[in-house]
Length: 149
Image (tube, rainbow, N blue to C red; front, side):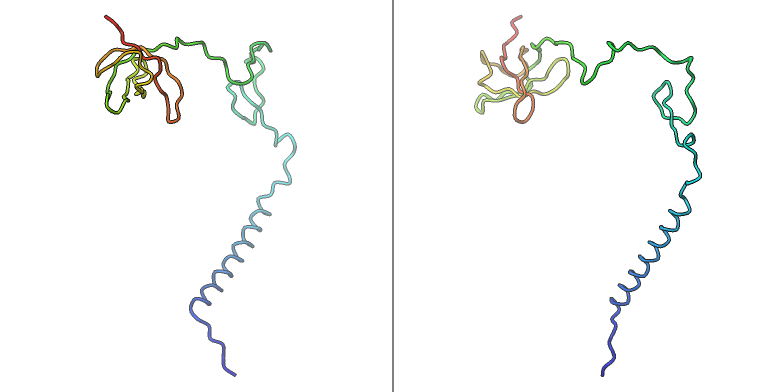
């Protein structure tokens, strides 16, 4: 009978398996050593200080603030209603293609405008008022009107 031939890759795979086994045993021993069975319940308790950070020390009750339950808001706070009409300047407009961009005066954001949203024709550097709606690819200017000086 012929002797089985071990190739280099087989030897390497065996070494890797053996190394994995050793690592697993080592990690198990480390977990057993790090186990904190001797801790008391008081040692495991955490407190929240006046800034909202977790500490192991009891907080100072003299720094406690009274909060009325009516002042607590659950969920997203309501935003104040902004003026829906914005002002801006036309940075680009192509009559042939029927679209362009307006730069919002407040946020310096580029907003897409389509020719169907115009009340009257516009051109580059015109000052306009408009409203913003959410489009498929981002904000879209609607009800665009020229500002008359």
